[in-house]
Image (cartoon, rainbow, N blue to C red; front, top):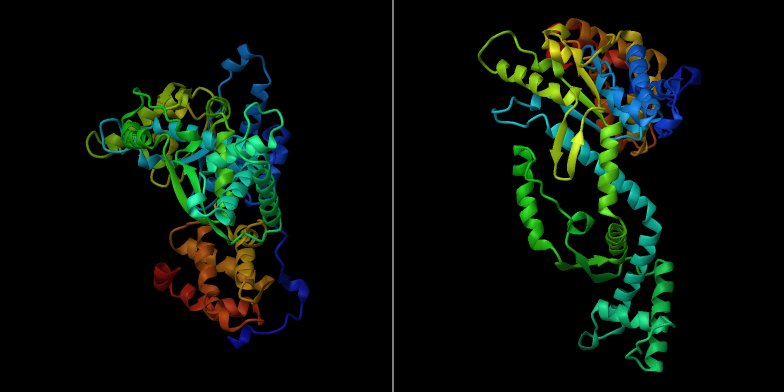
Length: 499
């Protein structure tokens, strides 16, 4: 351990992570080169796959600018990404979800079964996409009304605190009664006369101003209060139940539906600190300001016109030609996917969703099968195919340092929380990349995921003693990497189990 505890003598040979930045841009502002550039910030290589995805996403925007008649005739060009595990297929899809303003879900093809077997049917893909779209629109609407909700929540918070701080239990009014009296006191154009004397009105106003000032000065944050809340159902408990939804939807929804019937118009009391109560009340008031019908309508539109589905592990549902056994179910899933990918109408609890213009991106390693082993009809639904390259030593080294969320940066920041200064020399990064590529070559090739295993082995001792070495500087160079994992790489049998 003392071999790596030293001051850095050559600053140029030490890897220093880039500053982390975030960038989420509406799709309308992103051209294909910009989409590729955004993906380059997180994914090394795989230019063909990035270009194909970027063009497909940009075509979504171009299509929406056409006349309605022509727009309906243009179908999305679905993509199939082919490549070994750990080369970036899933990461490309995950990053795409962060840079486009469109509903997106990632699903595993292996969790679906042919109709008649136990498991989820493929129509649940569209239902999940709609749920993701509703969540997206809901969060946008909440942000729009957040300021109004905060004002309303603070008013309620003042009322609750006035009740608790100034009224005895026997004289305490219900919050609703106090709010009514406050409205009568502060409203000049009220026809009804308040049931308070002039002195009581002045006293109530003084108390509310005093409490409001204390709230603004954050003097009551830890004060515990009781607040009344609506039931937990989102959007005020509006739940629709569509009898024509799929069988798995029945099973998931009916208990929730019955429970919601009993919870309508029911309020409950909670004891919270002022800090937590403010957050809860803001959330409650914000939901009251949202029109659920508008949220659903917008979510339906986005799902149909801009939705993206990433269908992973599609090679795992390829049959082996047998007419019996579980592979029949795999081929059945392929046939069930056909109408969804080609375009059909799926019933959900919120209404029908057409899948005609949803973009599907499929991915698979195809180690034991070929894309041509898929049933011909499904092959035709994915006209664009891109092959992702395996990762060599240089690619693995770039993955260690180039992405903004690189492994080296993650470990540096993690150990910095313990007061430990961790740096990587260039020859140390070379050695880590060499070890990962060598183990991939000898054993199963799992791509960049091998780096996680190697890095954990290399930094195990530093991580273990970091809490006791606060203020120390650790430099990871080639010598130290060889010291930690050199024997494992040389012993092929041992590396097979450990690395």
